Length: 187
Image 1 (tube, rainbow, N blue to C red):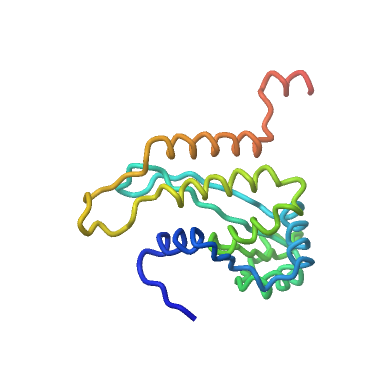
Image 2: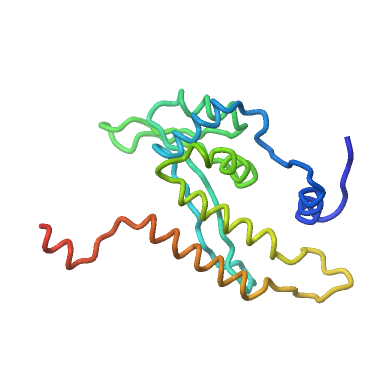
């Protein structure tokens, strides 16, 4: 086992450049990855939220995958595979059942999406866009340490524009809202 010191993004770039295969979800079998891809397609909420950073110049992109079920069993299985926690939300009224929610954090989601991509059908394009946004972000984010360099390094303008364009494309895919004129003619 080898210890690598420094900014984790720089270490990961160096390891990948050296040809080291870096994946965090290697312990999952191909059948488990295919099962998770089916759940992502059917029940998963795959999102990329754009938000302004406090005191920041560029937007941050919060990538997440969440599952919400009325029964705990499928989510407990996923939780044991991925090492995530499950939260229970009480019923909001007497005619509703409680809900169980599990969120896959970004550090587990990105390797999972890479492995699940060949199995995805309905949300394949969304996953490809999210992976592209994350790839651009990780390749162009300036180092966190400012030792010996400019105090406030910024992400290149072309990278910001690429991520904004990809995010806009993702929002178009997720939008199921029709224009008012179309709704009026349908009704």
